[in-house]
Length: 425
Image 1 (cartoon, helix red, strand yellow):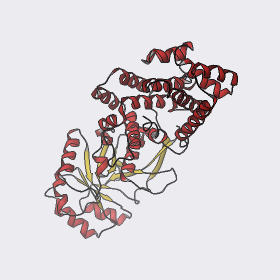
Image 2 (cartoon, rainbow, N blue to C red; image 1 turned 180 degrees about the vertical axis):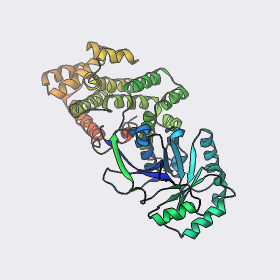
Image 3 (cartoon, helix red, strand yellow; image 1 turned 45 degrees about the vertical axis):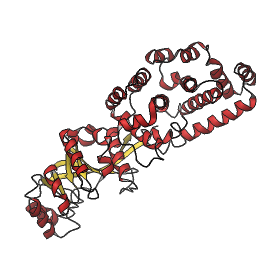
Image 4 (tube, rainbow, N blue to C red; image 1 turned 135 degrees about the vertical axis):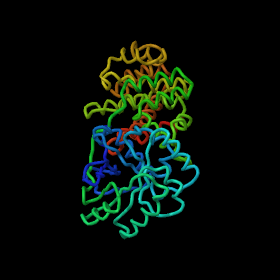
């Protein structure tokens, strides 16, 4: 919801000071001078997500992006969101070397991804990785120059790639590294990290509509997964959402297939509908988006003791989409033509008729405090003033929970704003 994406980039140059690549660094704000990282997984995901939001072409100008990865991010689907031609993934020194890690690197290399070893030290356990990586990064600030030379000589038999000297802060250190055979350089001597921001790019409305139709018409998770993978922004949001919904689990969700199995198709459809309606409100229609969420929840609550769970979900969609036209600036008839909506939803939205119409009219009357209309439609569904009042308070509280973080949460982080949605089913 209009929240900016942040990251920093620091140039990596060759021996002639020509730009070779950027290291992309996690930042929480435009004014941050360093990363406050509580979770390496979060940092890695944010960098990948913000790179997508900012746009690799604009951000990198045809150069490579070096991005740090912890073990969890490396094993996840997140790493496949960025095109291989753009990135070099840095394996952090905290990642344990194991047969599983080696197999994962081999798998990603077959897809075209390149790797670097970050802050390399001469430990025997890293030797199996040396033939598989393209770059080794050496921290020349934290160790004596003789140690750097010793590392280079020690790994030359197993490593045929190129070296990058990190934390080069003086001309003397640059010349020493260059004379030692190091090809690339990074540090304050060349440039400090530059903080960047841009508005998060929302997934296209057509992509959401297409996926909603697929979810309604298809029970094959493989087909839905394939469709999701065509839209990197949607994939990233779904993974974030699933991890939020699965916060109580011992293991986080790292793949699209895991996410789909966890949330289920019914909850996925609800999440997509919410995303479509609330993903990109301007200041002038933010209130309408909130009203749509409240209205959908009120319709659903009023149906709980009267209709089955499928009909309750359809009531939620009815209330939510009753404000779709002003929010999306698309004629409602045109929108519903593109969506495979059940007949009762279409009847209520277009003709104010059918079994769901009294619920929608009651919700609208409640917003206006039109007590005459409230009494009329309450009698049609055999409801009482006490039930309506309770349901209205509950729906307002639920909408508040969904929208209260809009000013502090990433626009793509639908998981944070919808954390109650999966738990209700």
